[in-house]
Image (cartoon, rainbow, N blue to C red):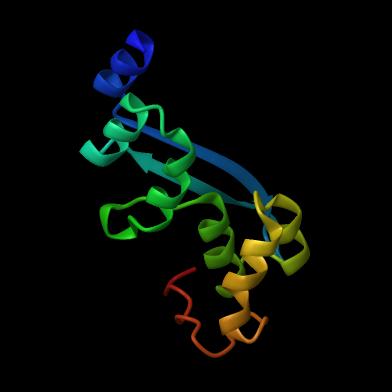
Length: 119
């Protein structure tokens, strides 16, 4: 319990990344998971409810957090990585498949934001 309390009090953020080959061009692009130690995250750690952290990250995009699978989805719908590569790196392939489905399953499909300019 003491270790959980110390971790909750000292943690600022956790960032995890995977480098994926770019689709159709040389180079790599990072898929990034971000967890910021908000008061809610700290509380989950203190109360030993770490199994709920993933859900908290999923629903805290407005705070700058995102799961690895959300990042993979964004890279795929922008056409920066292939479907196969995104799926091979997914933490939860079924969840990623569900996130991709509203885009029609193809880069640039319905519901897809336009690609960023200058890239």
